[in-house]
Structures are given as C-alpha cells and as structure tokens.
Amino acid sequence: MPATAKPIWDITGASWVDHPANRRFAVWKAGTRSKTDDAVLDKETRLVWERSPAADKKSLTGAIVYSTTKVLARRKGWRLPALEELLSLVDSGAANPTLPAGHPFLNVQLDDYYWSLTRGIPMPANQNLVWGYNFGNADTSSIVVAQTACYTWLVRGSYGHNYILTI
Image 1 (tube, one colour):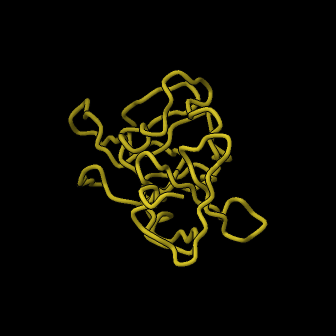
Image 2: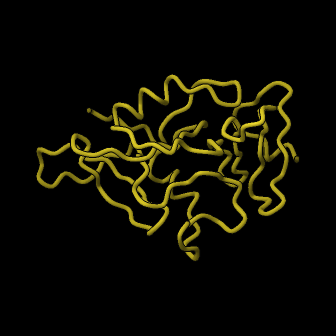
C-alpha cells in the first residue's frame, strides 16, 4: 500500500490489505477467525472504521459508553462519527445499502439510523437532537436522543469538527 494511503494512526506490524472488490478500502485483519475484529481503512478520508458494526441498537449514552470500552484492531480510542463522516461512506447512486459497490463492510443494518455526534436542529427548542443516517433508505434525520435507540458504527481518526454534545 502506498505511504499516502496509511491511516492517521498506525498499528505496529499491521498489514493493511487492499480490498480487491473496491480498492478505495483496505482491511486490517485481526488474526482471529471472526471478521468482527477487523478494521477498514477508507483511503479517501484516511478514517478507520469497524468492519462489522454492532447489530444491536443502543441509546446515545450507551453508544458513547460502548465506544469508550471497545477494543478493535488492538486499539481503544474509537468514537461515534460526525454526520459528515458517516455520509463520506455513502454512494449517492447506490441503494439499499447506500454504500459503494464492493465495499468490505459486514453486518451493516439497513432498517434504522446510525448515531452521529452532530447536533440536530432543535424543533421544538427544548429537545436534544442529533443527526442520524439510515444506510437502507438514504434518510438523514434529526433524532430525539431521550426517546430513541439506534445503531452504532465506530470510527478512529481526526474529527471533521469539534462538537460539544449535551446529553
């Protein structure tokens, strides 16, 4: 893999292998039988994603706690993405899922939203909202934090923005 395609963070001895079905992505194999331990480097954004996001829904607080305890690719430091980071995975010409053709991701849920940490537009003003994205129907929506459970897809790398979120 060319030096320009390395992730922002590095794993000593890691072997990033180009994903043959879509060379935009490289996969780091954890060396276990389970592919849920693998990570995916998006060479376009240099962000590293879980290869297989969790299949259960969590409250936003639960998703944040999950991100702080998750060990993947022998690393901690995973986080929920900003909305723009989730949308960076979207191929606007694709449908159900709205991911690029030949993507290496496994277990992506298509029936509901994935959390982001981007604040939503408060309507009414007293609601705490964040943006979410549905990879099945391509819907982006503000989600009421207190009343909702959504899917969690963790990422590593630099933030697109600094968000301050009150829960």
